[in-house]
Image 1 (cartoon, helix red, strand yellow):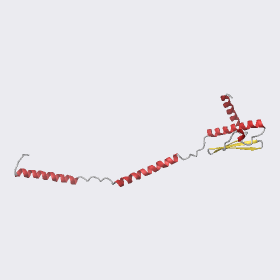
Image 2 (image 1 turned 90 degrees about the vertical axis):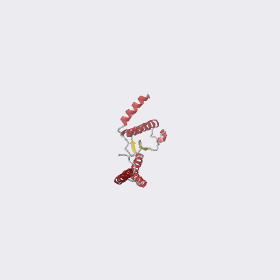
Image 3 (image 1 turned 30 degrees about the horizontal axis):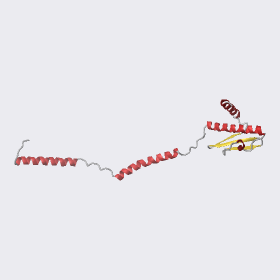
Image 4 (image 1 turned 45 degrees about the vertical axis):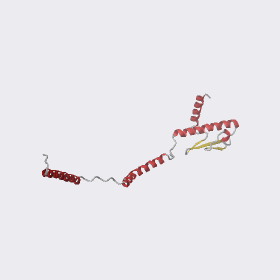
Length: 161
């Protein structure tokens, strides 16, 4: 394009400016308007709609995790308690041999456990222990008495007595 001054140059400049303005206006009309940002209220309500159930599930999970569990004690716990009753019964037998009678209560032997029940009938006795929702009983002549006696002898030998 040649540089011209005068009326022709002026007309040419006006046409160019008009073309530029018209193309700019066409471009603006054909370009889609930008999406408006969701309002803060809508954004917060969507967040709450997702976060609230998640938080409720997490809270419920924590409550359940800290609730006392009512599980059955395993066999080894039960056997340990039965062995403890056997040991108490041995103390009772030693007292009976020394005094010629059964003790009236376990306090005479130095035992004071509110969960341990001692009942004397004629010339025999019964021990009952309630521990962690489990009740275990022992009477002389218990089927496991020989096994417990062997375990007791083994423990005494290991201890050197």
